[in-house]
Image (cartoon, rainbow, N blue to C red; front, side, top):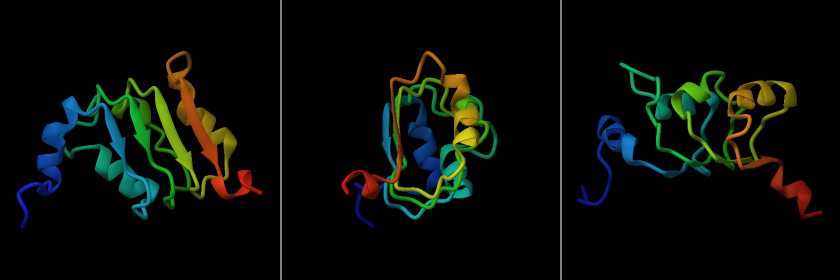
Length: 115
């Protein structure tokens, strides 16, 4: 293995307190795999407390995790374009705890905006 490649998930979680930006775009993620990546098995609260920007675009996410705010409490920018999210009310419910904090939200199907 190459030295610059991040080892298994537990090692990535060690870096979690220092992450400010995380790009998970185009990784064929579902809401379950997204939740698994953003949490560790022992403690989910504030796991990514310094993360401000999250890009989850171009995945297969149907809905945002309900407890996303407890995992990423200080999120400022979220790009969730080109997913399979259909319920605006469920999305707004998941994002409600970010009221007054979230500065940028990209949501919807990026392909439709270009036409």
